[in-house]
Amino acid sequence: MPDLFDNINEWLLGQALGDDDISITFGGLATRLQDGGIPIARISMGRSVLHPVIGLIDMQWYSDTGHVKLDAVPRKLLTETLLRGSPFGEFTFGRTEPIVANLKDSDDTSRYDLFQQLADDGFTGYFAVSRKFGGETVLHSSIAEGFRGASLSFATRRFSGFSQSDIEGLERLVSALCVCTRVHNDRFLVKDLLETYLGRISGDQVLTGHVGLGDGQQIECAIFYSDLCGSVALSQQLDTKTYLETVNAYFDCTVNAVSDHGGEVLKLIGDGVLAIFPFDDKTRPRENMCAAALASAREAFARAGLVNKLRNESGLPNLNFGVALHVGKVIYGNVGTEKRLDFTATGPAVALAARVEALTRGLDAPLLATKEFADCCSDESIAMPAQIVKDFEDPVELVRFEA
Picture (cartoon, helix red, strand yellow):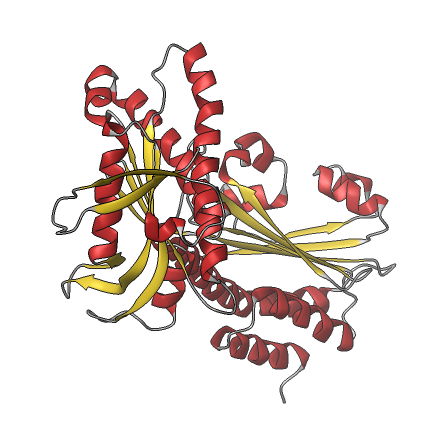
């Protein structure tokens, strides 16, 4: 007959196939253990993440609150010194056997700072174990050994600590819980990487099934197009490292400004930025999105002003760029071939925004917009002479906004 741990194992495997967040599964595990008479007062899980910024996700549950707390630890903080002083670090550096401690024993509590902290908080017993997920991954460039997996620990405040049968039962749950964790890791990475490379809105489009060649739609949006001035000359004047740092500093100014104002960066085209602010009558009205696009452009220039002060102090050339704003309908979806797809926006409105940006230098107007865009904004603008634009028959009416 199945016992408590068999039943929890079956539930965990069902959770792995479902859509619940791992925090819900984690909290549900604690509740089932408590209801089953296992004296759990703390559960902790640390899991490595193959992510460009995040190195470790730490999740903890305490019986005092009944809540699950989740923290993302940056890769740069995962130093060897830090990891060596923790049970998770032991598993990271190759330990395979479980860690068991009597937290009422001074010899045990002296093993890790964590043990002393737990003992001071009234915990009496501790049990931890780990599982690897496939191949290894490097948590930090300074760490020679890698660990792709999770470590799970349980602690109790029961006077007598954990019994041997408690420990054996808890260890039986580890593999199933790690299956849930690995599935959640994969979902997290897919969503996060899609957002990183495609943007939040486009990433959601792909995740919800718009993955076929030609999948797409026509949408109305404000268009933000920017390009770094003098990039070719900079690439010849600066060494490779400094040039790439310059381009990335420009992207920090423009891309972050767009994202902070609700825009969707679709493309980093060499040293250019294509972004859209899609319209929706209820949640993203036209006037608000155009105001957001204009605010993001102004913020990009403000950020560049601060960066340029620092660059001047270091003897580096200024970041100079233009921004063009336009409104119109774009074709938004998958283009490419069956073997290489790109989720982007295209069409005459995008082309016009790019052509207008190219005029910012000749007109000495870093922030240009079409009259169609200006008509959607309440901000004051200065009318510019209509311009003949390549590939467009009629002259384009332009305005200049103060950056």
